[in-house]
Image (cartoon, rainbow, N blue to C red; front, side):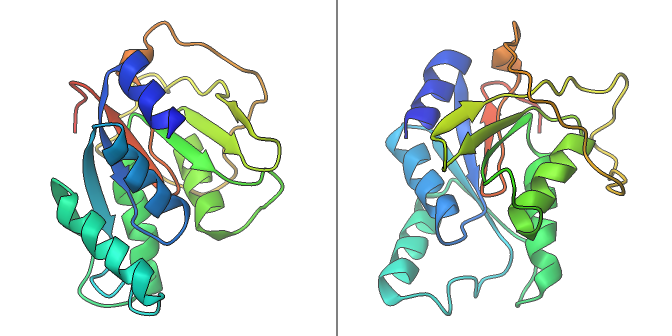
Length: 187
């Protein structure tokens, strides 16, 4: 929850977007609400929690009901909708917050982080193994039009350099589980 509070207090973030999956996405949605921010729920399909434990399904329904915006990407399960949901989150973001193990080179989180790199979105990386947060240098490409669907082929640029942005309030985060938009951010 500290990340959500810090983004709200230090960067004026008012909206947090969650992909509503079990685990980090659920935790992020809870953190966004606890920090007093508006929650947007990006749901790949309505049956997303169908195979979860009953308590997890109930929490999903509760969080979805508390969301000020719910965006569904399809009427029924299709693995492509998981990626469409992530793409929707990225296109609505100013930056990405991602919880993932740096050595893991597959899965939805890795895919979303790569796409964020192609979009030149700053990625706030929360490393659960080292309990460290970092922000690599990912300056936006000159003249980038984020309203156009990007070409995601190839590897995303990476950097281990930490950086501080003087215009941090104009950036925000999304994740491979979560997304944050700043106060006054464009959608």
